[in-house]
Length: 260
Image 1 (cartoon, rainbow, N blue to C red):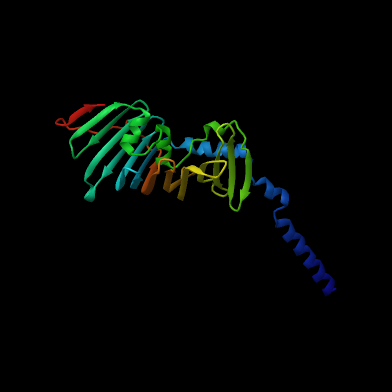
Image 2: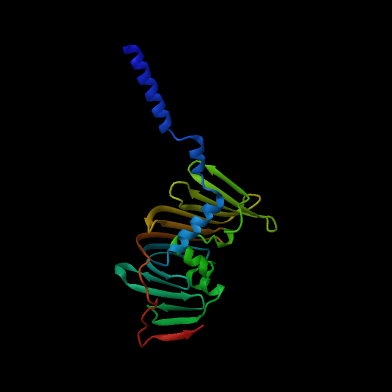
């Protein structure tokens, strides 16, 4: 009887253990369809209405190199202010950019340059060829996927711990690849390249922390390889979705104003 009892006990234990294991169907259900993944990523990006970050900014291009302390303040969808500081927190410059106009305050020269926003103006200020919306996303550590909401990726697979989405533009012979962490749904990398694997543009995001259930990177590196330009951001402090009435900066009365 003891042997029979032990046999039944062993069988019962094995059945219980087997029932606790996830079935193949459950495992497959945990793989998000591509449309749900894109909606989740874009939804997370849109959850961040305001963004304030302080850290180190590194800009590298053929004609300019700089590594400095900075603060960025973003109010979506149309305002961003970047303040540059020297040793001991000395103010060096402030740039206020909206979707229509800009103001650049050179503190050392006591001069404010202002005018209408255009693509060439951002390159003059930040020394990197980047659009206004891409500038906001770069500082906030995100990528705009609005144009992907109604389109299935041409390739969608899993590599290790990541989802890999690939979108192909045959007319331009280019591919855009997105790498997303399966657990956190953090966008870790995106690449724009041609069919011969020559990379034109690349963004990498690291050291994620959760804000309002949204993974935000403390380290962002955006590289425009065609123009040999890169923008590296390393934050020390980040706050999001705090109420911001208006973004501006104070201009002393004795400052020269130059219209561009």
